[in-house]
Length: 197
Image (cartoon, rainbow, N blue to C red; front, top):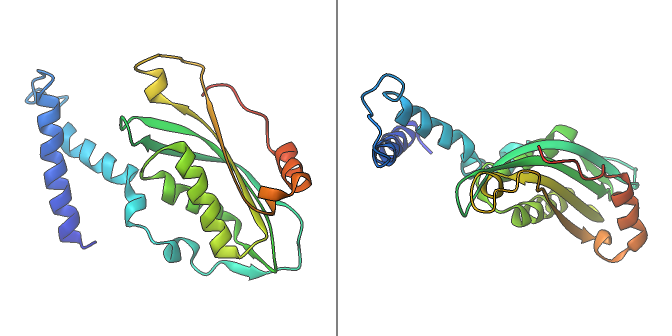
């Protein structure tokens, strides 16, 4: 995306936020709101920047040879996303385990992959699967397991208004899908569900 395209997007989304705020009956000329439309447009662009990232750029060649074939677990990767149904935030932590098959992925890349998919309009169930499949594809590993725990503002701020509810989603690929021993080893190593954030 070119710089000009980004400027056009800001202009269009700024006007959209201006209309949205105006629809509440607020006074857009008051000092606290004068710059809110452009600030909101920039914030939204940041929260959805995953659409403009490529996997090649995110991984950046950080796949390395390794003889280790045992569980590698990267846990408590915090993430922030937007629910595609209400465009309200959900946030939490991701735990990723995989069984290497001759090569491993640089540790920081797990967080970058999580962020790339989280910074899109999402549902948690699909987010878990996208992360798992991407790590499987990038590393050629024998199995990937992903557990995500999150609090959803669409359940907390509106509707049923349940302040302490959390959601856990899982995705299991390769050996984790069929090997109960491998699956249990991963699940035993993952932190137990944490209370609402």
